[in-house]
Structure formats: C-alpha cells, structure tokens
Amino acid sequence: MHFISEELDDYAVAHSEKEPPLLKELTRETYQKVVQPRMLSGHYQGRILSMISKLVNPKVILEIGTYTGYSALCLAEGLQHDGILHTIDVNEELVDFQKKYFDASEYSENIKQHLGPALDIIPSLEEQFDLVFIDADKPNYPAYFDLIVDRIKPGGILLSDNVLWSGKVIEELNPKDVSTRALLEYNKLLAEDSRLETVLLTIRDGLTISRKKIPS
Image (tube, rainbow, N blue to C red; front, side, top):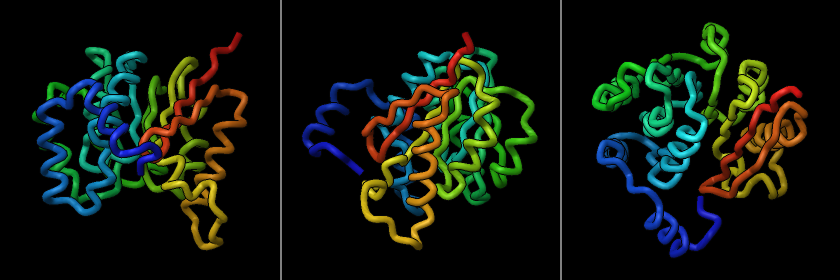
C-alpha cells in the first residue's frame, strides 16, 4: 500500500541506503517461491527498520511474525555484538527458508527462531526487550500488546506494522472484518496508553513507533 505517488515513492527509495545483496536475493526467492510475497517488508521499509534498530542498538529484540526473514535480518543489523533476536512464526513451511538466509548472514548466531503461536511462546522467553516488532496476524495485535508492554525496557521501542491496513481504518467498518476491528482497538491502545509515546507514520501500510517512557 502506497499513500504517495509511485514517482515520489521511487524517488525516496532511490535516495535511501541501498538494499544489501543478501536481502535482494531473499526478496527474489520469496517472489519466486512463497505465497503472498507482498507481505515482505521490502527495501525501503527494511532500511527504516535497520536504521531504527541501529539507533536503539538493542541487546534483545523480539519479532512477532517472521515470514521469510527479511525484517529479522534488517533488525539484526542494529544488534549489539552479543545480542539476541527472537523471531516467532506459526508457518512450519517457512522455517527452512528463513534459516537458509539467517545462516548465510553475519547474524546466524544472534537470531533464534521460534515455531508456534506467539501467545504461547512469548511467556516462555525470560528476557526483557529493547526493541519489539509486531507484524503478524492482525486480530491478535491487542493480545500481543498486553503480553509485551510490561516487558519492554524503559526507553525501549515498539514497532507495529500494517496499522493503516490499506486505509480500512478510516472506512466504515464491516462487522465481519475482525482484522480492521482489532487494528482500530490496537491503534487506540497505543495512542492512549500513558506508558508510551507514539507516532503513527504513513510509511507503506502504516508503521507506528512507540517509545516506552522512562519513569521520572
């Protein structure tokens, strides 16, 4: 989803950091072999995720929704040398695909794959998180938020993808559209939670940056 003209979007991409060769290869294979390749973060958003991670310089990252591993590799670029990125997905068919690219990267020792429902896996993780990226099934966004908000370190960052949902968040709600309903609830949670500072960016399909406030 693009909210600016294709020409302006192309200009922004052309004047941003280049896509690393391994991620170009991952993109190409995703489009060749995987259903719904548009779910990929892609060059421009991937560079944004990389930049945010580098600014945060996290020790521990949690990613909810791995898909083919593109966003995980972007986020890993900002990890501390001995940091860890936990990435969770329910699609068993993509595990080997993800691992192929994780192993080919310089972050193979830093990325830990988890297979199964995130609502079950997150409670089993012991760490607190410096950076969290949510890009999974939309109906569970509010539930994911409830699980992770108290485990984000003060000053830590929560990134939430697809929060504009192709513009459906400002359209009349279809009573059967559970994804849009959940995103409306989720966006309200982020905007109103006193523990967070939140900015919703009109990047691609909507990307929210929320910062956990540091107690005074």
